[in-house]
Image (cartoon, rainbow, N blue to C red; front, top):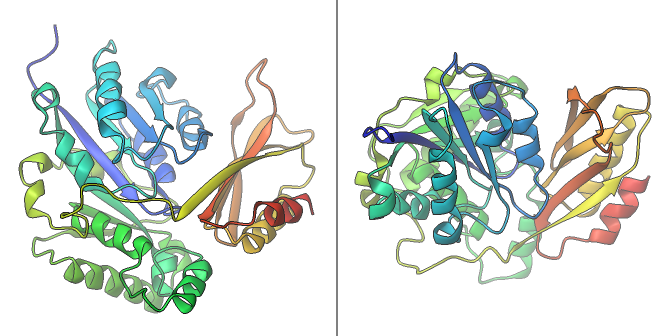
Length: 349
């Protein structure tokens, strides 16, 4: 019989490449037996983030407890996507004790939190807290994402644009709804850079009119204990109307300024050379984010590639499974008008 207690859910939001998936992997690895499930809202139709989470191999969150939603931004398709996903997870046995929801980098948390007010959902789950992950290295450089050259060109060409461009609005709206802010990639910052990143967060909170205390936790390489994120006990759905955002007076919002596509990549011999080509491809697009997998000749492990702007990292995450096709692929995300041919040429070397 379904327990009468509502299942807590943690919404993890953040811009493209901020480190959400890496953070959630560490949460799964430090759950200490707590039974978890994850809803992953992938941007585009290639489930890279879901595969990264399924590949962690943690018994507290088996593969069947990772539910991928790739048919659109969850905050825009909440009726069609969210309710069935919750129903699927709540039907799992043994029963799930906590649900993590990783939104796409474009998502606004507020419409998703408001869905927890629906009668068919409200009695079964609650929002334990909203966690916003922000890219510390980008903020230290005065950006909300690692590569904003395309935005700068857009501002220069259109005199009607002001500081409230769509990407900045998404960033501010995510912080406006946050109960906890994870300042990621602090291993890339010195003391002055960390101070600049903190000042950028404080400025965004002030701009959004946030007057409640919001803790900021510095994190390197996504390493954080599950206990730091789970169990906040806020019940955000009961107070979400008090969290003002840019889109409060709009019926919906538009993500047409972004584009994404997937590229297959053949077997590689040198991960460092692949990283160099991915960085060149990101610069050629220009792309905000490149992520995916590759097969390395002579290696039994799958190579994960993560690029934010032209900053590219790679690591082996798990062995290729028996019978699994060692097919490499990358997802490229950028602003509308992203030059796909230039990306493909640069990636080919």
